[in-house]
Image (cartoon, rainbow, N blue to C red; front, side):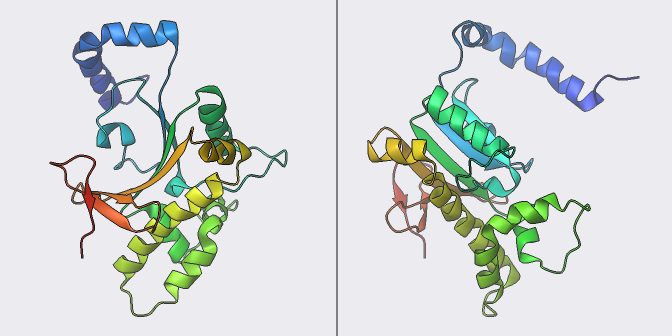
Length: 223
């Protein structure tokens, strides 16, 4: 009997032999001193869009919150269980991150489910259906556009959902206050799995721009 899938055990052995061996001191410092990441990345659960890989980060550099379709619900202190809001609260209030990045991605299964009104719930609880209802108004509007192809509708809603999450982030008092004081900055980004392209949202216009990989920090809109 294996305690873990063999693939994971093999990966762990490789981690210990290479990455941990090369960064032992960093891991020990993180264990002794705690984590002090400056950026919270809100990403999708999708196994193809891991923020740590996309941004090539070292241990302790980013705090990652992952859920279906990288959504943030509005601020609702109603006594229910809110794992996403709890992680956000911890990152902002305890870790005191300076940046929050909402990272969406192409071919998102959650977004596909939001657009497909004919699909049956995966279980009696329909947890995904209820979660994706956060973007239901946008999904209905995008679905009604008959001039767009299914692929265009999906990409459009993937990017609109990022704006939704940014809007909902600002309903949290701790986020709103710190942003207005200039101590917290919100960002939106969209990752294309098939090409590796990263598109960054212009905070003033809402447009998504693609930065030149050779010129970090500069972004130009593509027609």
